[in-house]
Image (cartoon, rainbow, N blue to C red; front, side, top):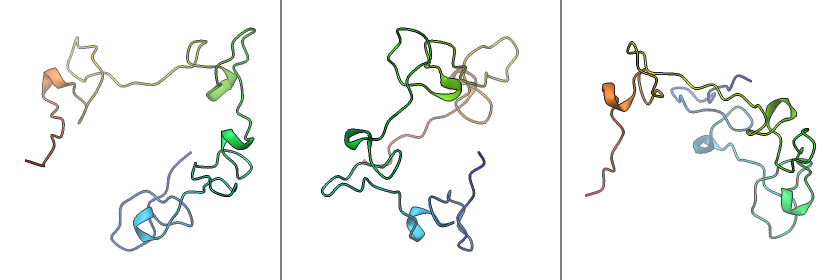
Length: 111
């Protein structure tokens, strides 16, 4: 599923709801039960108040299913990109390279 960007001019944030981002008025749907602030999952309610999540289709497994009806343990393939440097099998952090080959992580700006 392709995510759309905010429809306000000059904004590049992802749209949440109604074509706008949180900064411009888009809100995530919360559970419809009075006093509950959890995000709704299915049917307007959270899992605590009745939203049913799919269970892994492998016999005896009680974990929550992801894409394809199976959990992570039973075959869900997670696509991860590897470093673009020849022979390196580390995961990409930023700009196609791993930490060892030059990717810099953001550090806290509060002193």
